[in-house]
Length: 267
Image 1 (spheres, rainbow, N blue to C red):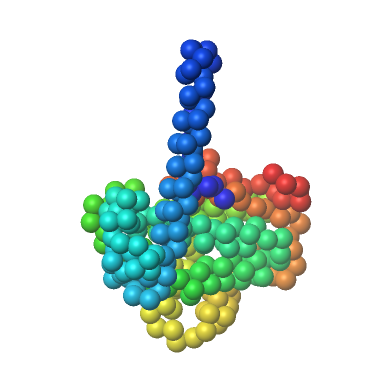
Image 2 (tube, rainbow, N blue to C red):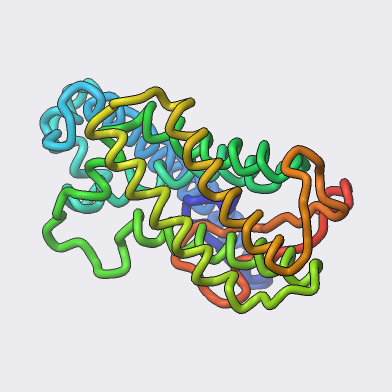
């Protein structure tokens, strides 16, 4: 996965007075240690925010996060500009958690139905374990949040783009019109997200049950379309080629998501 922490690149210049050459490495080293300390400290506060969220729900306040971290609010504000900044950091952590499970599931070398089931379970396991984080990011209005900082919308876009590439690759492999791949992908993502929100709210069935129902719905659509083209796929037999995708977290852009055939070799 793409590292969610911004990397700081520094350039060094050769030459100059000898005293400058002796002083700059030490100064750079101190700045580097301080930067790493702030990154680590900020990550600790995000972990504390996750604990506070689990205890207090989506209405969690900065004072709750500070208490969970064992610090005062002024200390917290040294690392986050405001509440929106903390929420954005929580969103990035949520993306990391989701993609760590979802990417291996989407790319698993399995038969179609087990692969669909595994990907769905990855998503539902995350929202089951972190329901308040999902509710906070999906439904809590955040004042002064940048328009491009909607983490849930960004993740939906990345995942839909990935599924578009994956479905399109398979459809071309089967000599089918791949134009349907994109609306299919967005339809699947929307259905899964809406079902996930319903399930979090109602909990009228187990996670295994809702995952299985969605698995069968998605497979029925795939099976129906392929049969219309005279192609019969075995739901429990791996396809001849295992197509995989490479995802990049953040707003989806052309070229960010690439489908290719798995060779078993590291990329």
